[in-house]
Amino acid sequence: MIVDAQSVKTTDLTKNSGYDGGKKISGIKRHMAVDINGLPQAILVTRANVSDRSGALAMLSLASQNLELVQHVMGSACHG
Image (cartoon, rainbow, N blue to C red; front, side, top):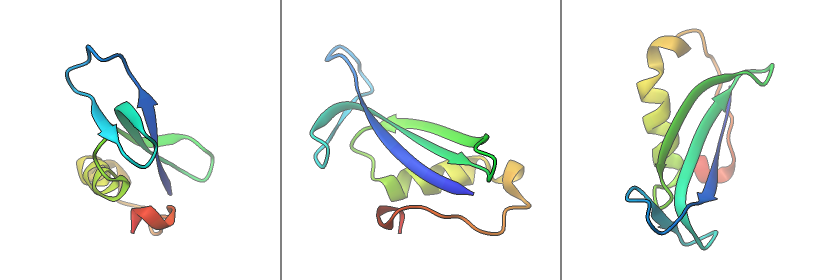
């Protein structure tokens, strides 16, 4: 399983937006986990100020019932 996150700019009117200081983007962050075929297995949308690691852990926790057979999880260094 591969996990990653992407910050996305949203309008200033969005109540659930945050500021990603690393990317200098106000908006949301999409956390995704895909299998070896590139098919999405888990998705979580958070405020942009949520760290990649925290978002990935929350996403995997929420989707744990669907991920019982997963043996390895790969992500970038910021995923811990």
